[in-house]
Amino acid sequence: MFDRLKVGIMGTGVIAGVMAQTLKDMRGVVCYAVGSRTADKAEKFAQTYGIKKAYGSYEELVIDPKVDLIYVATPHSEHYANVEMALSAGKHVLCEKAFMLNEAQAVKSFEYAQEKNLLLTEAIWTRYMPIITKLKEVLASNVIGEPTMLTANLGFNLSEIDRINNPALGGGALLDLGVYALNFASMVFGNEVADIASICTFNNLGVDMQDSITLRYTDGKMAVLNATALSECDKNGVVYGPKGYIVVENINNPLGFGVFDRENKKLAYYKRPKQKTGYEYEVEACVRAIQEKWLECPEMPHSETLKIMNMMDFIRKSNNISFPGENDFLKEGEYAKEDTVGDDTPLPDNV
Image 1: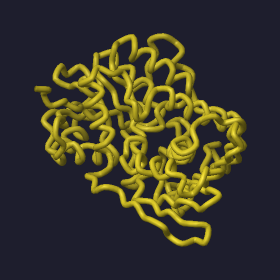
Image 2 (image 1 turned 90 degrees about the vertical axis):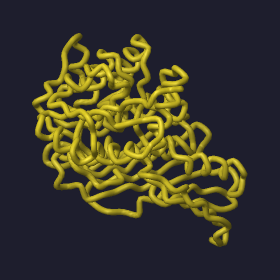
Image 3 (image 1 turned 60 degrees about the vertical axis):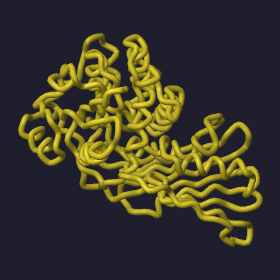
């Protein structure tokens, strides 16, 4: 029988806490260890969530021989170095979104994981949720006809959070919120994008705080996406077809979706299955992949992560957005210094 997979959490912010809580009652896995920049943070986190091992550095966490899978929940700027550290120690890795700062980092990380024969996957939780499978089934039923357009909005007032405002931490609305809208469009329309037009508003450090993005696909479909770190919004996704439309409630943690005809009459409503937090699905996918000795999860294959990263690179380049040192990883053996940045800064629980 397959032993319980032991998870080590890297980082002690809000999303790390959600993962720790999720792992508590799951079958087949246990939250065995946590690593932070300081022993005090790690100890407090471990006590809160009943975790056996607490380490005051990420290096100590990854070299624990009992840890099977590392969940990386640190700022975007640290993902590349943190993932490489875990892979170097022979650990499978589940890394939070946005996966890396840019596509080049993602390519290098996937190549290294394959070289080490280890699982590496992006923790973009919506990709793993059963409600998304149901959405695809309903769309395939032709109830609204062949969709031609979609819209997706995601916004929270995160204006006071340093990690969002700071370019050194890979801040901005795109990597934190726009990534959900892009993934929603990708899950519905695929990735045959012909053109991308985007415009942003910035803070005084040049970080994008609001993004409006339009995608035109090779088959003529269009997606209009909005992300804001300055305001609250409806967070909905709408898919439009010639016979009606579908409204998905909350694209970054869907509550369910309604199907409407051309007279705006609700034909059906599909509610999401009962869930612990929504994080359990990505963990279950990792357990399955490790058992089967897969190096990627079919729910979010490497190719999909790379396509999303490529689009975000294009959007950033179009708007002159860059992150300090984002290409320093090209120098062999160079790692980000662990003591230069804190663990993942608190965000709303569903981000």
